[in-house]
Image (cartoon, rainbow over all chains, first blue to last red):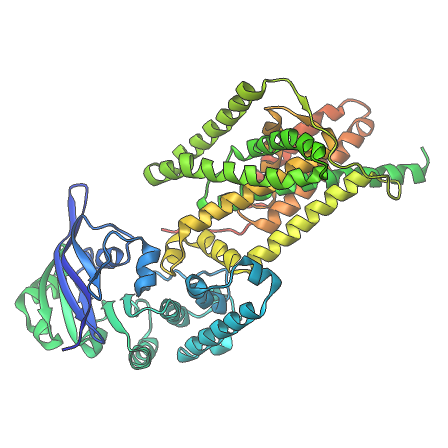
Length: 254
Length: 306
């Protein structure tokens, strides 16, 4: 079995008296594609917010490659290798498509202000390398021709793709996708599926994904975790989940 | 008055307006950059000019007695102002921002302004102090050399800042944080570092503004930042608060309006409205902007994210 990449042990958070997530245990192995599902308000996005340091857990802990991550700041967690997208697209809409990807490289840049003011050889070397990498990424998503576009002017489906490209540009090992197919039409969803498969192969990346589109989840996820009222009620293979009576009761409601 | 004389006077007034305007623009930049990044009107920003001016007041004689050019003091003033700005952010605004609402941060900013004004009064007294001559240039083409140099400094600083924001990684990160703080964090950007840097740059600009002011008026008081700050704030709102080119345009427009209204309002109205009303006209502009185009000249309409 592959090595553990993202592991949560008894992770939980309360907002005042409200327990939004409790005793959340998960062990994601390198290269896996795990689905996280549950009814609205079950705590799925809370899980993502905890894994990216947007919220600080009030119980338990989580680890990336067995290194403790809980308590760290968001930018430190990102530097360690976790990236995410958002339920509602949050691109830098006033910037170009290219700039959106470049911004993710900011943390790795070694040249300082003098370098960028004087445009030294070191500056150009790094800048060219970064731009090439960014362009490669964009071409994976078929966005290479739109590098100069304002990000806000892209069609919806492409904005979603750009968000994934931008997350990958942080050099993440673990990618959290929050409803990547939300609001997409069937063609766009199919394209997205193909895209996810490509990036798994190409970047050897592990993915945890929240999704409401059941066909998508059942199609591509190797393992599914179901939460309701902030607790895991089931986990297993897609076919097991789709027959689990607890899941049917809580999630499918029939 | 002949037509030629009239025209000369008009150009003279426009040049004066550009001089005052570039001072307003540099201050407005400080307001707008900080607003862009943390959505706070930093009402203490005007008082950073006073801090810069006192720094000049103390260091100019030192420079002169050390046989160095007096204008080198501005480097120290920039450092002093930047440090003040960063300290105010770290000690006063950041804790409030973490705990409270936008309103409490705004009130903290007003408190910080009063604190700085009164601290200066306690330390240095309320009497105006004369600052030594920093530079004094000969007339050039009939215009004051000091005025032209002031405008030039303003232009250079504004162009430099624009290039920084548009073409460097730091500037790019600043724009990203200003657009979406959470998304920026998730791109691995250390948001707190960007906020600190923004305060440092904004406050440093205030120091340069105080140099430009001192060159003209040679005087420091503990209250000097109040009016300058308010007018620059009007400039920032006029240009579109949060918008960097907007602050520059707003500052220059306000400067020219002020200069022209001082010169012409009395003759034009037959002495009914005197030049003493020029401030009223400026703040009238603020009211009109807020009524007609609250987003300012260059501001974009943005809906609150839900």
